[in-house]
Image 1: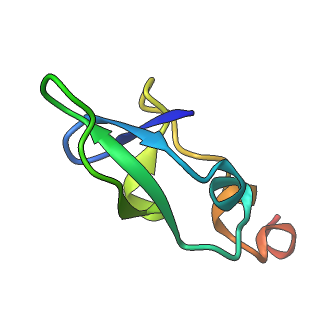
Image 2: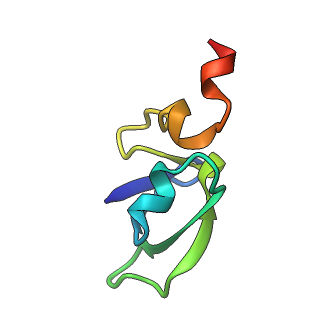
Image 3: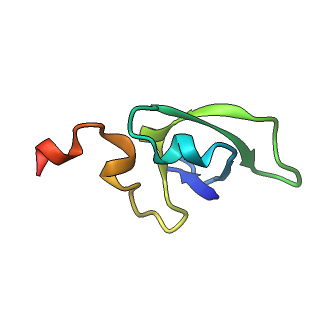
Length: 70
């Protein structure tokens, strides 16, 4: 699954989609797709990620207490 860095708009291929969906995990492993080749995997804070369209990630992916904040 691809998401984008909010600051740069560069695409990141998320290597651990289960971690992306789990609101208790704050960082996910991914490869930055910038330039000609995918870069080596590194960790990215979910708070700095969005969908490639610019839309924010769902709150249920980032906040373990999202049901209390309704």
